[in-house]
Length: 131
Ligand code: HEM
Image (cartoon, rainbow, N blue to C red; front, side, top):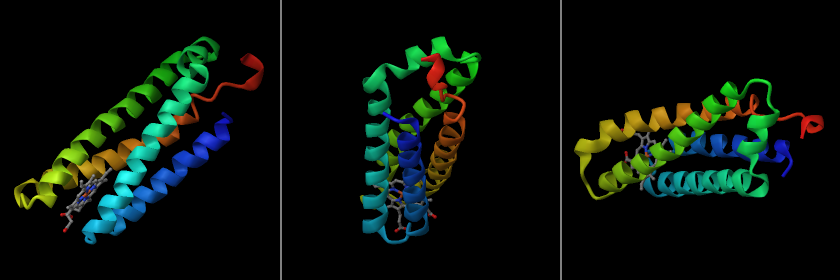
């Protein structure tokens, strides 16, 4: 898959998350938008991994594989955080308001990690001639 297509999707996911945060008081919409963003994100990661064993190729082709490692680590952290968002979000839906602060802090952390994943993805782009 073309890199720009992946990064465009990545940007759409960030925009979706912004919409989800803006609409956080509307439970139904918030949950739908965030679920869509997270599922779409996992699909992108699978696309990257399955379409061309990207990480392996990139780690050979890039002059600085450390940058790639940082990008992959941040991306993995975001996905792990999604698990926490679903867990705390479902508790909130079930009426457990004591978990609100956790959901809020984890939510902004998850969003920040997702933006960092996008920014660092530019480090992981391998020039065509080195593939
Ligand atoms: C990346 C994913 C998510 C982010 C960044 C996020 C972020 C947030 C934020 C910032 C709030 C406002 C908290 C406050 O100001 O008190 C919120 C509220 C809430 N979130 Fe999420 N959330 C995410 C996913 C989810 C999911 C998956 C669920 C449900 C399964 C969920 C359910 C809720 C509920 C029920 C509220 C309370 C809404 C209200 O005030 O009535 N969230 N979320």
